[in-house]
Amino acid sequence: MKRRTIEFMGIKLVVNEYVYEPSDDTELLAKAVIRNIKPFSKALEIGTGSGAIAILLAKLGCDVTATDINPKAIEVAKENATQNNVKIRFIVGDLFAGLNEKFDTIVFNPPYLPEDDFDFLLDHYDKMSVVGGKKGNETIIRFLKDLPRYLRPNGEAYIVLSSLSKPEEVFEIIRKQGLNYEILESKSFFFERIMVVKCFKQR
Image 1 (cartoon, rainbow, N blue to C red):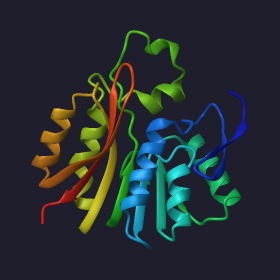
Image 2: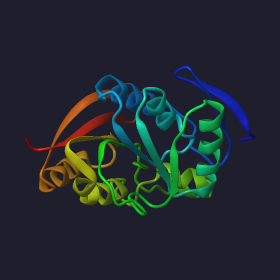
Image 3: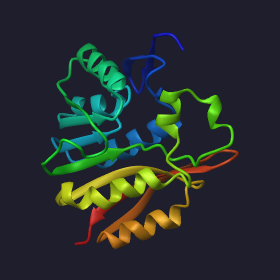
Image 4: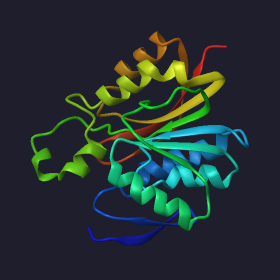
């Protein structure tokens, strides 16, 4: 894929072969977050990719930090933030690496597909974006085990989960972390159902 410009939920974005192009899961997550987020929240997006959701949050007046393990994705996201006239703090890192603060809202569209015999057809960056481990939920579980330390008392996290990545195991981990959860949105495809799950501290 060569560098090109796309439109996503009213913003223009540059994408290339190094970033996950916003798709149905991105839109489902973005709409759920925008409907639920409190104005001017301190927000974190993990795995920002093109920066799409971080930019939408910044346009709502949120104080946004965005991270990605892929430095090439951060380069693209920085360019997109500049083009959309928003200020975002970008960090290259795996999940919460490099962070020592708490947030009102944390957003993560993780790699959630299980490993597959055909993964060799994916290039390095595509695999990084979509394959979440042998069962598909390993990256999500790593995220959840650290999540409570980074949420403010009334904070909320929004994640995408697939029916292919053993969601019941994920829900059990959420409970073990002392968090409640709610499925806000879902969309079915011919081979899977994707869900947007809100996690929040027990009140």
